[in-house]
Each structure stands twice: as C-alpha cells, then as structure tokens.
Length: 400
Ligand code: SF4
Image (cartoon, rainbow, N blue to C red; front, side, top):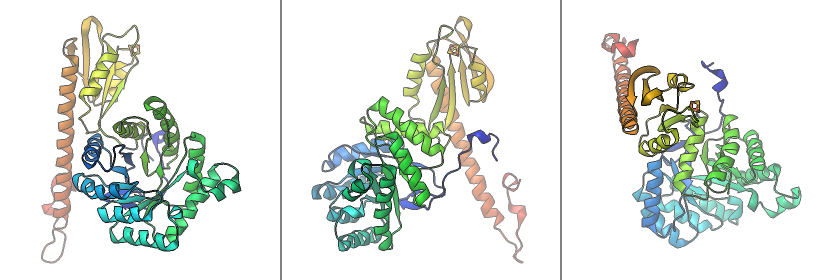
C-alpha cells in the first residue's frame, strides 16, 4: 500500500498491444492522442501539425484517410514525423490496405463496416504484413441499424454489443492486436459504455468523449467523463476531442492525467485564485509563467501563492514555491524549505530561471541514476572464473 492510499488508482488489467513503438495497455503509461485537422493531401501542412502535436507531447497522432489521394500522401507524412500515425478509415477496405502499406502504425477501422469476409481478411493480412495494430471505434452516433432496432436508441448495451461484434470479426481472423473505443458526446452514455466494455473484455481501451465541444466546455466535459473512468482504472490511451487547436487536446489530456497522478509532464503550477490579500498580481504572474514554462517537459511542481495564508503550506509540497509577502518582499522556497527573499522586480524572470535550473538538475540526476543502474546491472553480472558472482565490481550506490 502506498504512503497516501487515498491517491491510489488500480488500473484495469488489459492486454498490451503496440501502436508503432508505443505500447498501449497492460502496464504501459496511458498515452495521449490527438488528430490532425489539415487536409491529409496537403502533406506539408499535415506534417507541420503532427510536429506541433509531437512538441506538445502527443504519443500517437491520427490522420484521416478519406480517399486514395490521402493514403498516397500518408507515406510522406509517416516518414517525416516521429510519432506513430493512426490512419482513420471508415468504410473503404482499400484505403486501409493502402494506409498499412504507407506505414501507418494503426488502422482505425470497424471491420463490420467494410463488407465481405474476404475484404476483412485482406485488411487483416495487410495489417499483419506491415505490423499495424487496429482500433475498433464505436460511436453512439453511428450505431448499426439492427442494434438501434433491437435497443430502440443508442444505449450502453448497444454500444458494447457493437464493439464485441466488431472484435469477434477480427478474432475470427486470428487478429488480436487491437484496442477499442466506445465514444458518445453524452458523458453518462460514454462512461456507462466504457464500464460495460471494461467488464466484457480485456482489450486495451481508447477512452474519449466525442464531440465534446469547444475549448472550455469540451475540457470540462472530457475531464468529468475521462476523469471518472481513469479514476476507476479504465483507459489505456485517450483523446480529448475539442473544437479547438488539436495542440490544446494534448495539453488537456496531460492535465487530466496529471490531476490523477497517472502521468506527469512539465511544470504543474499550483496557484491561488487571488483575493484582496494578494501581495503581487497572482493572475498575471501565473499567466506569464505558464507561457514561459511551456517548453519544460521535466515533471515538477511550482506553487505561486498570493500571501502567507496558504503560501508556506503549499510550498512545503512543491519543488519550487513562491509566496507573496508584505512590502513587496516575497519568499522563495526550494524543496519545501524557505530559501531566499525576492523583491517585486523580475519575479517572473527569476522563477523561470529557477525552474529551468531545477529541471536541468532533475534531468541530470535521472541520467546519473540510470547510468549507475546500468553499470550496477553490468557489474552484478560479472562472474569470476568459477562462475561465482563478483560483487566487488558493483558500485556502492547500486549495491546498497
Ligand atoms: S492564498 Fe492569500 S491571496 Fe491567495 S486566495 Fe488565499 S488568501 Fe487570497
């Protein structure tokens, strides 16, 4: 049991698949996805957008392939970027085959929608030949007619049945490298469908609230839906769907994971809303800090609190703390302890410099620890002529 059991999340046990080099499911970190909204045929624009998503931390990026010109452009896109690309295919099995040949790491396709068994077989063969995984994507808005007739309306049971029907088609072809999503724009429906699916199978789940809305509304809706699922241990990869710049989807995805302690990236700024007691302009300072610290990827915490009411307490829990003090003299904390005072001037510059230095320190310590571990493993494997383990070659830190 951990030191703070109230923060523990027990993840659902799912099987693991690969999307290119990214592991999805099992004990793999929950990956963050987004999707381009450029014309795929405009390879240059799509590459630029994928690279912006990579810079924001996206693990996987999906690209629509509605026609043969799009799959023709896919190869150039795949070659120019680092992240694995998921080709979004809807009905045309030929697009799926072309996408697999072009280097897509995953095909988002519902096998029940592409026609005859022979076509499914061809797509599966292409996926196997090119090392592609697949995603079955059930959406409440496009459920099969027979399920709508059976259940009367889109409901969790219909969505789960649809997902399992598609899954069975792939299983019958001896293909198991797939994940499933069960999205709806209604939070209740999506969450109930995912809960049902999580119980019904052990495939990795791609979680998302579809068509969630604009930046603010969609973020709130996704945070409620995905937050509840992830807190319950459901979800192996996620996408936040926003009518906004896709880079925002990635940022919100990481913020959700960070709020639940499931994954950390960049500076987690803890700041107060400010009030009449504030000793400096908290809102303007935080806004500037967030902009100027966006390039930091090392996980760390920074508290920026307007006064001593909550400042020292928050600072105790953070890597770097800043608390407003009287007469324009503020307190700076490092690793939870008071370190030095700072006058009003250059607060943002000073904190940015401190965070950058701290991030470099953390990274250097991680590299050193990894090197010690690697040396330790190597040394621990050194045997004498009799085949006995020669512990004298182990470095002290690794042996302790
Ligand atoms: S920490 Fe101080 S300034 Fe910030 S909201 Fe609380 S009382 Fe107001």
